[in-house]
Amino acid sequence: MVKARRLDAGRGRKVTFSFDGRSIDSYEGETLATALLAAGVAAFSVTRAGQPRLPFCNMGTCFDCAVRVDGQDLVRACLTDVRDGMQVERQEGK
Image (cartoon, rainbow, N blue to C red; front, top):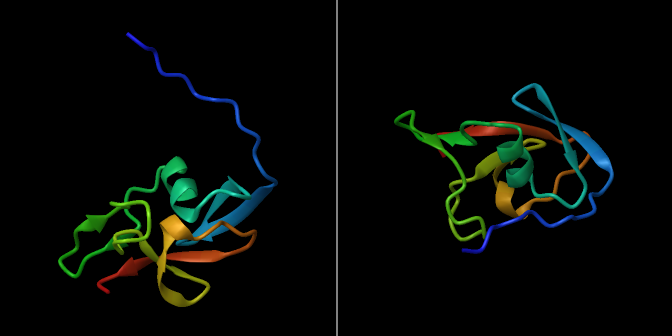
């Protein structure tokens, strides 16, 4: 049986952004979806029925990871690199 192991990887410069007012640390080169999942965010968006949504495809095909970034709606977190100071909000009912 092969045992999985995490490969060593260099990380970019540390950056900080906010998600619904909460400060989150991440690293340049990571996607917004990666940073939010690593920070333990339980839902990126909420459906009109109030159901939480998280990334599904992680390659930009669906919009389950859609968030609002710096006032722009329906930004796919799985395709968006983190930037220092970005303001990210949960996308609701879009």
